[in-house]
Image (cartoon, rainbow, N blue to C red):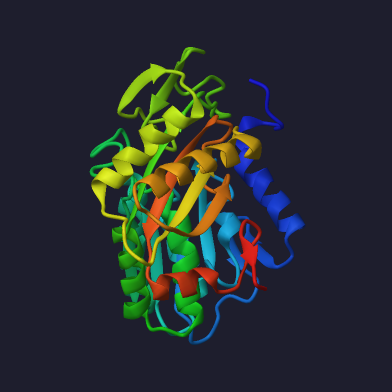
Length: 333
């Protein structure tokens, strides 16, 4: 195992110290492993919390700031945060308008966020709603979840819902936007290599040099099938076709097309993949209204990519274009 670490047991804690040092616009509670925007709670604004296992950076801590999240809870690598973290975060971002929990559909995340919502409401009376993302078309059930996994749509949702909250919408309205985004987005991913969790010290799964996994999850969960490595245009078709088969993305308003890197894939290859994806969408009559390319929801150093499509309308495009200022995503501010 070759990694830029000290002790595997200290990776998350030391990374949070580095984030704290690098970003004075954030406030880090190191005891509870929570990243806050420095001005939280923002009075009169719905508070937005997400979180999950570490190893997917910049998601979620890198998406804390104006225009996105108010707080993010960091678990150990590929391990859900515990309810106590989420309760603490919920209390500290409540500006009087309630709090929305954004939860990826993994069993530990869903269970712990549900428990935290109940505890926070009982202790403080804060109004809490939750929205679960489940956009992965690869599999119905996996090692970590019942139902579809929450993957790339989570990034787009946090941005769009962050803008809706910044507009001053109430909790029910913000949650409605979140459910709309989740319902209109689909994703599919693949891996060329496995990744190595520092505490394990060895690859999560064995993938021969001449093979790739189609439909992989962000924790190394198995996908639909293992096939020989193919040219990029064929890989793009393997990802795009199941997404288009699952939801109608045609229409005048177009889509947000998100080509995501899994952590070990250079931007050179991601832009090459975007070109192939764009050609397939054009052939299918799907108009790209906005795009995002880069490693935003990763799986440590896994080589591979995912494709996410979000069917848009004027409202979602306007919210997407709204200013955002976070370590991982920034424009218009």
